[in-house]
Amino acid sequence: MGRGKVELKRIENPTSRQVTFSKRRNGLLKKAFELSILCDAEVALIILSPSGKIYQFSSHDINRTIAMYRNQVGLPESNNSSFRQARTMEFGRNNENEELRRSIDNLEMRLKNLAGEELDMLGMQELKQLERQLKTGVERIRSQMGRVISENISLLKGKHKALQEENSRLQKRVKLHELHYADPSSSRISGPNAYMQFIS
Image (tube, rainbow, N blue to C red):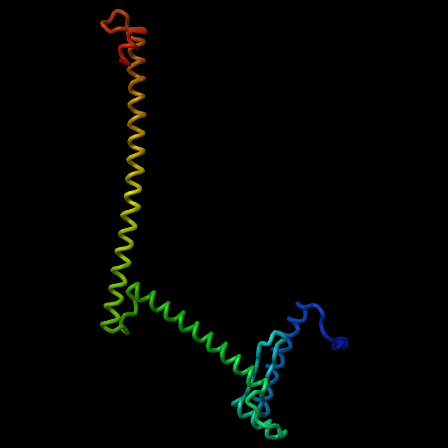
């Protein structure tokens, strides 16, 4: 049993419209590719999405195919055509993407160089510059380590002093306890007088 006939009208739901666009666009691009292979046809397909994004397929040089089409239908060459503007926009996006890829590659190579890897392609000047950068980095790391160590030492000294004071207080309490409960027959002074003598 076949599918029912689809009514061709604009899809109102934006999500469904985008899904349908993606599926049918891919289908069109696939069919264009298959036609060019199976029938040895020169095929050029251009799709502009509602947002203005360009999708294209060309089995040969697309500019040549378009020039042949314009010649066949008698259209004059126009430098200000919408297609040329769209191609210029796409070319700009491609250049921007390529520039970003190059920047990422350069940064990855720089990180490898800083880790001491893949140094064979560097000349003497580049190696010296890398050495200076590493020395500067090491100095900054050592400076930060010195600050952290100094802060930790100060913190530990404060804790040590607090512990010493607590220890001193505890020792005084122990001595006071011993004096208070000393044997009355001993030569030690006991009672309140002992406490007064201890704290004086």
